[in-house]
Structures are given as structure tokens and as C-alpha cells.
Amino acid sequence: RASLRLPLRKPTLRTPKVHPATGMPLSKAKGQHLIHNIGVVQKMIEAADLRTADAVYEVGCGTGELTMRMLPLVRKVHTVDVERRMVQETQHRAQASDFQNLEAAVGDALRLPLPRRFDVCLSNLPYQISSPFIFKLMRRLSDGPPWRAAVLMVQREFAERLLADPGEQPFSRLA
Image 1 (cartoon, helix red, strand yellow):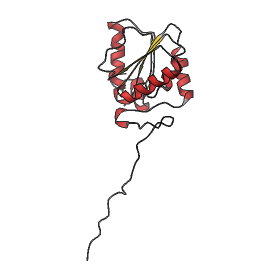
Image 2: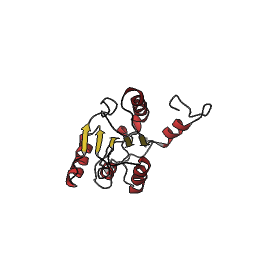
Image 3: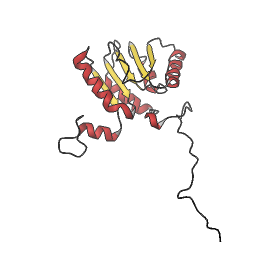
């Protein structure tokens, strides 16, 4: 009598998560959680209190939802993303709308130097770099020209750690 061995779990054929507007596959390993809710984008922009003379630094431009909303409001947007295809998509969208005030770079925001001068950091931060990037941003206050504001979207658990009081479970050196 032959014994039937069943797998412990049913195999699944998972398709990669894709951006709803562009159809670009997203990498969870790179912390890609792209904004496509325009209401959230608008609230971030309002919170930043952007001025026409501002230079803005954005980390993780993704497909450019946030970037495209900032471009008509400010003097310059410096953006960086680890993936060339994301930067290309953002540049393509900016050029198609005749914006000339985008400076985009491909690379790791933790390894690349911060722009020489920026007034606001406005970003939907990739989850994996939230903590080290915030430390880098804070160091800039003492090492270089100061920035006026930072509006950063981070993962809920990370935000709870950031706001924890001493003695609370999620408290860390970041708080």
C-alpha cells in the first residue's frame, strides 16, 4: 500500500504586487509601499507648508505621485530612489508635464550625500531605511545648512517607537 504524502500547505502562485497606475512590480524587500491615495499626498504637502522659494529633498520617489504634486509649488525638488526604473518613471512624468525643476538621482539615500541645500524634506520613506535616514537628517542640523521642516511618512510600528516614552515597551534610543 502506497502512502500519500500531502504538502503541509497548499502551494500558491503569487504574482508580485504592482502599482495600480503604472503596473510596475513592487519589491517588498526594498520597502516599496507607493502612495496612490491623493488625499494622503495632499495632507503631506499641506503639513510641509511649502513655499515657492523652497528646495525639497525627497527619498524614495517611487512613480512620482508626491514629486509631481510638489513640482509646481517649489523652486527645486531633489529626489533619490534606489531603483533606476522608478527614477526614470518620475523623470518621464516631469518632462511630459514640462517641469524643469526636478533633480533626480539613482542610488542609496544612506550612502549618497544630502543635497547641499534644502529647506524641506518631504518623503514616504522606504521602511528599511527609516531609522538610519532620520539619524542622518538630524546630523545635518549640526553639520550643515539647517532645514526648516521634515514631513516623513513611516510605518506605524516605527512611528510608535519614535513617540514612545521611557519605560514603554517600544521605547528605543530613537525616541
